[in-house]
Image 1 (tube, rainbow, N blue to C red):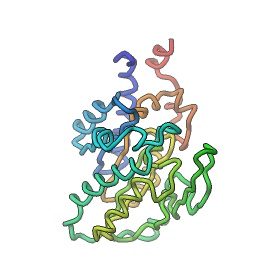
Image 2: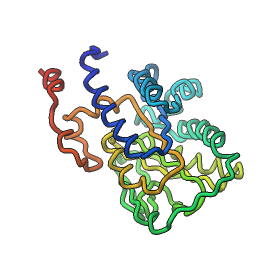
Image 3: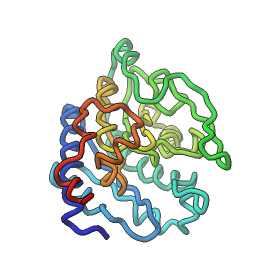
Length: 270
């Protein structure tokens, strides 16, 4: 409901980060995955869709698929929490599995990665951890990470296809076990279908937006994944504001200027 003039500066700032994300990806294919975060409307889906067209990227829109799969409280954890439920993650995984199969199932190329390089690529979660997360005492859950700091118990293979998913908490999967996140369900789907050489890696970080995701990408792009999926959410737009980025810092940002108010942000505050 914000006036267009108040949203435009944040659109521009997000696109600034998005271009840097693509540059950091260094010609690795990027697909945008849009997830809905409310029951009925999508505030910024058109922006993300236009962005994908502008940069000739594929765009996966899960809003209609999720909303027609059942009640809002079925595919989310409502009323306790607005994040995705196991069922919601499964709906996403089913569509993502088909998308990835269409891309790679008939490709017979074999990829080989240097094991030393794999070892050096560390994502933004602490590596090799098994810990209980008790952010909400009503919804306690366990988080496993592999040696590279991705949210999975599976170690990275030196051969085969890698799909790395960057995003916020909707990818990370709060209040759920590892095996209930859409990345892990996708892995299982592909395995059941006989695709044992495709691996999905979860680089989602709760509270992150494009500038945090750039920092995680910098630390892991050396894996040279065959595909990068960037999961986006409506709140990615206001979360690029300097005030929000100062308040929430899930990943350290190298550019300190991003934490300073722009002329446009000062005017909005006034």
